[in-house]
Length: 140
Image (cartoon, rainbow, N blue to C red; front, side, top):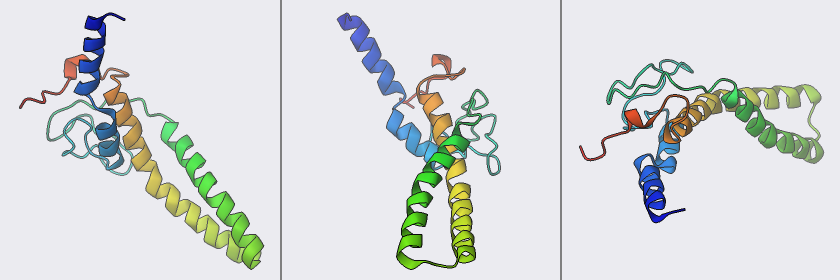
């Protein structure tokens, strides 16, 4: 890779920092400015940011957040379920109610945050229409 190509790649990566974008997505804020809300309701992504005007309708989060939610909740709840059953031997109905409620609450907490993160990753990587034409002006 030539020096000019390396410099271009370095500049390109600095324009949309992944870490900052993902953290803003986790907070369900606009990945560009971090001030405007990304969501309009529980899971509906706004068409554009109310603060900076960044278009957000390009996102293609689809089923990704749901799959990640199931993966995370399953990896947290399954070992806890096994441990609590072996350690305490609770009544099956109690076990089902406690862990069913825990799984639902954790899922409802994680789902919009993971969706925000996926939209922010797509924005940072300029995927699905989040192209360089809408690059932020960090100087202002």
